Image (cartoon, rainbow, N blue to C red; front, top):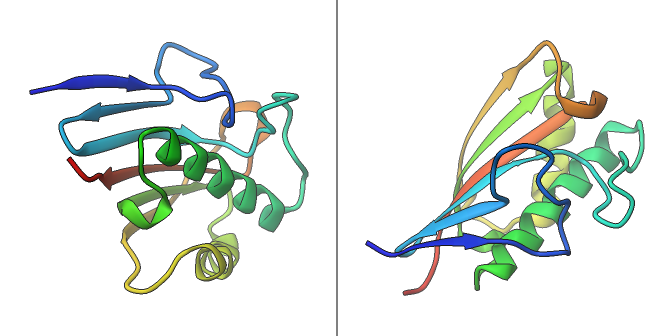
Length: 128
């Protein structure tokens, strides 16, 4: 089993005791991403669609640093502070992903770091 820590300046640096992602063999485990601009480490906007879009930009940058992309994701876990924003998640996912879509779970949570409205983590399969 080969384990590799993945890190990129094109996504927000970890704000806690975790890595941006860990690759084990051909599986990539991407830590939850919130809508931080990687340059300023501030939330990109209060607008939910802009927040979701930034989260996918961050996830994509991490996947790319590991040698893949969003198309390699097989599962997303979506955390929303208001489940009524589920439609916005679908709208952004339709813009940034291609069919067939990966598996997904979505849950409402009481709060997220830095006051974010959304956090998403991912599992991706990469070429060996």
